[in-house]
Structures are given as structure tokens and as C-alpha cells.
Length: 621
Image (tube, rainbow, N blue to C red):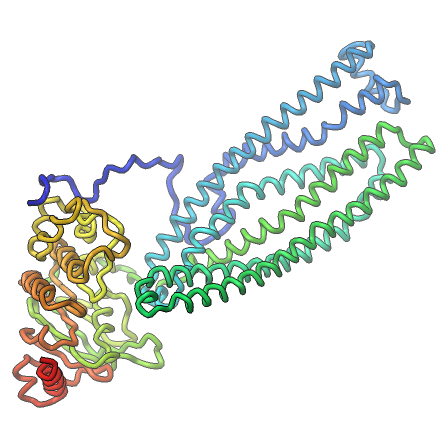
């Protein structure tokens, strides 16, 4: 017996409550920096004020030392107004001036600490929420893209874009965006102060900036190009790993572990080579910047010392100048190091934008309406379709299935049977022709409302890493426990589910591999039963099952198909002998149609297939 029934919806879980974001989550459709940052304007304004505080602290940092050199150690005074202001503040006592200098050091440090904390906290918060928005939007967009996009895309590369590329953007916003602003503001402030102290000396110090800017600009472009190649190769490596791990049973069955290991190593070696080329560029930039800044420092020391010896520059001003010079070159060096973070973020930005700007090939038409409850009449009128428009799979296919009928499609592999059932729920749209349900072109309905009235039982049953009851209720998450148990009983699944360690609460392995093929198929049938849709599509539902499992599945399918329009694809003709109408597909067209007995009497393709299978069965027995 199943555990005590409850009327709670299947979608409800005991998970901890979700944390609500401090703003409404946004759907991002066009990736633009200002659009990403707009909801966080106030946080960024406060962070920018904190940046200005950090820059002010950097500018003020050497001035307590100048006070000590000029007024405590009694160097020659060149700024009488400044000295008089200090004396007016604390008096002429030297120790009082020294105390003031020490207090200023502490005050500047406190200002810098507060502003640094505020800036880091705010930018980290903004970065995290932008990452949330991006990840949410790209994941939603990927799910809404047409099946043709997923047919051509590599899963590992998509995973890489949703995870690593977004992480790189978040890292840039957190540690790079306002860091650049800090460096630029500090540079501008220091240059102004240095010009105020001695403009000739400042020109000497800035003489190395043009070659420095040229080197940084040139290497930044090369690094960005190399980073894109690295990210592409990393996505390919991820795809190989995802492909092999998801098909590990096939790999082991054919003893191809060594081959897959070599394939992975080859891909990894290519990734290492590309990454080393990129790293070589990044490694070259920092020492080149250091050498250029060292030249600038040497020039300042040479000319500064000579100015000081000649009496045209105070020693304290030289100390402040050298201090600023070190601080001046440091932001430039930091900006050069930021090229790596910027390049990764820029490449991630481009890769995410490629996905977000990918248009859906199948989309709701303007004015599309919610589909009414279907009776189940399906019509194809001169439908033509090809995955490659130049090579059509279906050629002017026309047929009609009445409500409540069981229709079967048979034919050789590649004839177009699976393509037909992919067109009914609009996984693809035909190049020409019309598909109707209950006399209405299905393009007039929204895709979601159309698919809500179609259930599938496929050859390859996909189950999720979730409890059994959640897998059954996947297509109808609001279903009660009683409905779940009833669906499982109708699908002949309850007898094995109740024997599982936790019954309906047993957590299934990934893709349901902890169950047999027949058990997975019966859960899929229970999933279709609980949806209770007027149209049912069965694609090789008994393929690969043993006789005992096939019998149980057939019984469940008979219950499932009652009072529904059912479309069945099967290679074994014994599966569809009782179908109301059988369509024989050959070379993308309907070659024959009719009931089983009628087609046998015609002696055509169906009869040949039937005789061939019957002869093989007789020979095998």
C-alpha cells in the first residue's frame, strides 16, 4: 500500500524558504552595460562616493610627512600660508604639530578603511545581483529557444556560458569596474597636485605615459583575442566531459575508456596550448610596464635630486613628489594587470550576448491565443519540412486523424516518422503547408497552451534526479498524492515503486538509471496519465523491453490511449496491429494508409514489412 495520502500539491517541498532579492528580478534580453547597471544606480552612486573618498585618502597620504619635514624638522618653508594655518590650528608648539601630523595619518587611514569597505561591499552586492539576473535570463532564454538551436549546440559550451562566463562578468564588476574608477580618479588628482608643486618636474614624470599607454592598448587587444580562444576551447573540453559522463554506460559497454581518455587528453592539451599562448601575452605585459615605469622613476630621481641640490625644489616636496610618483605609476600598472580581468569579462559578455541575441525559429505569432480544450482531430495539409531547407525530410504530406482514433506511423528508419510527431507540438515549423488541430492552424495558438494538451511517451525515457512522485507529477506539478498513486496503479508501476526503499519518496539516480527500462517506461506512462491530455504521442514505447515488461507496458498503454487521439510510431508491427489507421511513410511521403487488414490485402510496402518481420519471428522461434 502507498504511504498515507495527502492532498498537498506535488510541487510543494520541505525546502527552506527562498531569499527574496531586494529588487524585482529582471529579464535581460539585450546585453548592454547601462541596462545591467541601471537597477543598481543608487548602490553605484554610493560606491562612487566611496571611491572618491579612497582617492582623497590616497592624495592626502603624504601630506602629514610633509608637515613633519617642513615644520617639525624645520626645513626651509616655501608655503607660508599652509604653515600659518597649521600654527593657527594647534599653536606654534612643535610637539603639537607632530601630534597633528600623527592624528592626520590615523584620520586618513580611517577614511580610507571606511571608504574601501563601503566600495567593496556595494560592488560585491551589485556584482552578485547582476550575476543572478544574467544567469536567470540566459537560462530562461536557452529553454525558450527552438529545438533546432539545441540540435546544433553543444551542451557543455552552453553550461560554460551560463556558469563561467557570467562569473567572469561578476568578477569584473566586483573587482574591476570601480577599481578602474579609483585608479583614474587617483591619477587625475595626483597629476593636478604634482602640477601645482612643480609643473616642469611633472612633465618629466609624465614623459613615459604615452609609450606606456600604447603598450597597454596593444597588449589589451591581443589578450582579449587570446582569451576568447581560451574560453572557446574550455567550452569544448566541458562538452567532451559532459558527453562522455552522460553516456558512460555506452563507453563501458564498448570498452572505450582508453579512447575517451585519449580524446579528453587531446582536447585538454589543445586547451593548455591556447591558454599558454594567452598567458604568455599577459606575462609579458606586466614586466614591460614595470620597465617603462622604472625609466620614469629614474628620470624623476635624477632631475629631482638636481633641482633639490640647486635649491629650486624643497626636499619635502621632492619626497611628496616621489611618493606621488610611486602612487602614479601603481594605478597604471594596476590598469595593465586589469586587462586579464577585463578581457575575460569582455569575452564572456560577447559569448552571453550571442545566446541572448539568438532568435527563436519557432515563436508565437502576434495575436496567438490560448488553445481551447482539444477534441483531438489532427490534419496535415501539404506539409513540407527539412532540417536543412535544401534537403526536405517531408514532401507534401497530407493526412487526417479523427478524434479518439489510434493512428500509427511505420516505415524505414529516416523516412520522416519522428519528424511528423515533432511538428505537431511545434518543436519545428514546416517550410510550407498547414498543420491543424480541430480545424485551426496550430500557429494560431501559443506554444505553451498547445503543448499543455499533448502528452509524450518516448523510446528514451528521461527521468530526473528527484523522488519518484516528482517524476510522475513532472507535467502536472499541482497534482495531489492521490492522483499520483492512481496514475502509478494505472501504469502498472505501483507494484515496483512500493518495493523501493522509500517508496514514492525514493530518490532516483540521474536519468533514472537505477531503474530497469520497463520500470522507467511505466513511470513515463504514469506521467502521461496524470497529465490527462486529449492528444497522446508514443514514439517506440516498447522498444528494447523484455516480454514480461512489454506485457505490463502494453496493458498500461491500452488504459492510457482510451478516449484519446493517440499517435504511435513503432518498428515492431505487433505494437500497432489494432490501430484505427496506419500510415506507411517512405522517402518523406505517405505511400499507403489504412487499417491493418486492408494494408495486408493490398500487398504493398506494409505487407512486405509484415511478412519480413513475421518470417524473422518464425525463424527465431
